Figure (cartoon, rainbow, N blue to C red):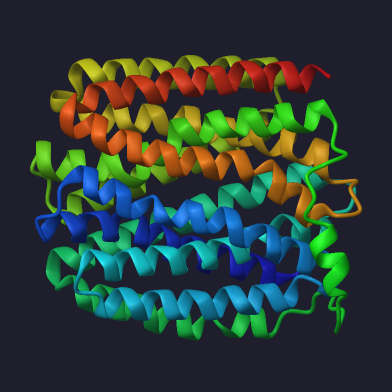
Length: 374
């Protein structure tokens, strides 16, 4: 496996993990309401949805190295915008640029992994998911304690410096590079037509996963810990780091056990719905241990999630585009889910968001089980 791909995955997940908790906590510290924070955060998946397909279509012709470089440049610009943003509109712009950043990375990351892991696509992709989870955990932990000691602006400048140095990895990548591409072919490849029903059912399962996870981790959990429990930034960062570490351990342990796929889908569903239900009842008293219970279910699901993605995309002639279309409903779910969760948390209560997350995850697990039987 190309070492630069490993480094790119780690550094991207480190920065994305840091931003995951940093931006909502920064907005909350400036007196912005939860529903409005949800609206700001929703900009990212909407832009992601639109930009990813274009990146993916270009990548299937031009190769993945140029897209990784573009993603790195977008990451640097995004962090610079966040560092100097002073209004909700400025942060919305940052979220839009963050969408471009993520769209570049996810348009080609699995394509690059599949390129270097012939015959072991699903297994290697699941291992990389564990690596990204570890990077996310470390990014959250680092930024949580950084803002506990220093102002938010210093943490953003530190991330900017880190991102600049990390540019050495995409620039030094030895990938399959094609110097040109045809614009007509690029636009023609964006058509969603001609894909099997199994393809779209897989996309639907992934959409349910997004409903379960994205609002919970990107909006609800950090704000609940800060506004309802009064946790400090360092404690919040540690709680999130433990979440991703527990998820990574569950992923690695599950891979090594090599159990039947039915066991994984059943275990992830039971563990997650148990954690979500108990959070709705006892979140104010036992938040962190129940949060970690969700992490175990989420970590196990990475194995089944990557399997269903690989099954319907690894043999495609347009791998990047197919993976992009698989995630189109996913991004719509992120966009609508984070808005719904923001209003639900503010006007109904956090417990309803926890229950919504658990129900969505069980539905995702059931459809995944059915897909893996095929």
